[in-house]
Length: 269
Image: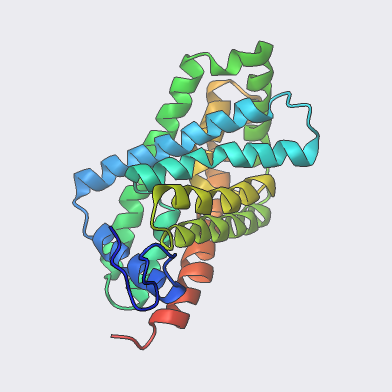
């Protein structure tokens, strides 16, 4: 149970931004020190959790009949399941772990520790997401709604692999600004319900706005590949992942993590 403070005698108010920065730094130090097997396993779980959000998203938007805006908002709302499972259930998500940059910039995390966490989380995320894409295909998910869900999945995969490099890069930046802000807000929360509420709006926004999340794409594009989508290839998958991943790192690691480091941690012991 949270301890009361002079600024919060009830012990239930949200943590202030300066305290959020300290809590994220502490969490980043712990994440960088995770042993290899737990880190990889938690990475696989995170990829699977994001894939569950992707499946839920496909069901929600297929033949919704609600029009462009409401359908995209609904899709974003249900896709939030993925980050809810990651944050509340516990898992290592590459994009959220871009916030470890705060501890790195403050010399609390080594460059090797930062890159090791990112690499192992990314590999684990990839395995979990692709495995779930295969399982969704094998489970007959693409046949739902008389095949309309499969058609939508194929269209999504094709559109992602056809994005120009610059477009995918910028969409990746904008996406992880919102994802890392969702994680930032979670560190203000003192309960699971509060964390869920903190997640829903930023994640709904990034999905509704059509931004690009590298780990989500590790589910959506392979699902299109398994479905035999014309024009969707391994090369196209890589062509999407490279700029989106770079953009995610810039958005989360630079625009969010470094900004808050400069505001709250720079020059502090």
